[in-house]
Image 1 (cartoon, rainbow, N blue to C red):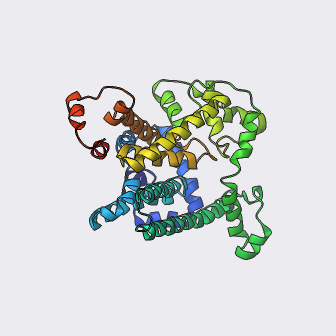
Image 2: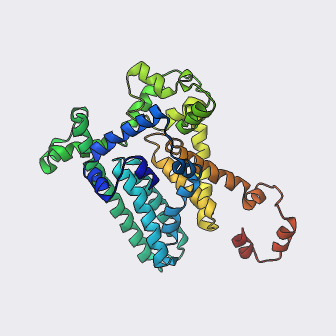
Image 3: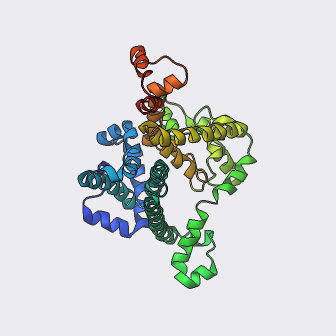
Length: 361
């Protein structure tokens, strides 16, 4: 609601008008960005919510995983929260928030399905989950096609992406350009990656892999990020591939600070941690590994685009908070050999059967 107000929504009528014209809505949000920069305008509610970004990681996966155990009222409130969040991104004609919701739903359903150990008993639930994911994905893709077609018409970029003549005959030239843009979306970043691989390395001093962190450094520490150009910025100067307009996958973002060999090692570590949180979220059913796993689903889902978890301040703060809580959790400390906070409590659990100890963890 705070974001809707900040970006000019005055009521249901203005929201509906923007939803009907996603290209105009998408273009209008940049005027808000510019006004915020020119005037230094801030919003106290949004600043507080940014610091509490970890709360944004909870609703969707918890609602999906525990849906059958929740009361009707709680389900309604949860769906209302997701709808309000989605409406904001529909209002500004932006796909990011909608894509996040789709991926978080998919991550939650993966966990819910894996926790149902009796495959015969829960076969119907698994089929319903599969159908739900298919319906949500189809709705998202349908909106994306229309959104991209309107953007191409608004910005006059239809000629940049060649639409299929067969698709044109079936759905017409307008939607065909949208279909071509949707196909172009998850693939063109690898061409940008190829350009970046030919660019020499220059360390960005921690300002390259995570734009949100770089924005904090610039705002509060006076760091001039332009002094430490990222792989993407230097590749744009060398080849013309636009750093802020086209994608280059997550790898040049990471390599700006880690080098490309370092990025390979990072991805290996990410794979190990992804598997660990998956196992913990399914076996122990603890909340923190569950939320971290779903956030990693987002990170991996956006690999063809960018470092999505580091793009926005709420996203970065949310993930950092989850990781910090995970590292400080008593269960993690015991597994890494650190003494628990309460040794007496630890000793008292040793007389309980192993399955009970596991559940206490």
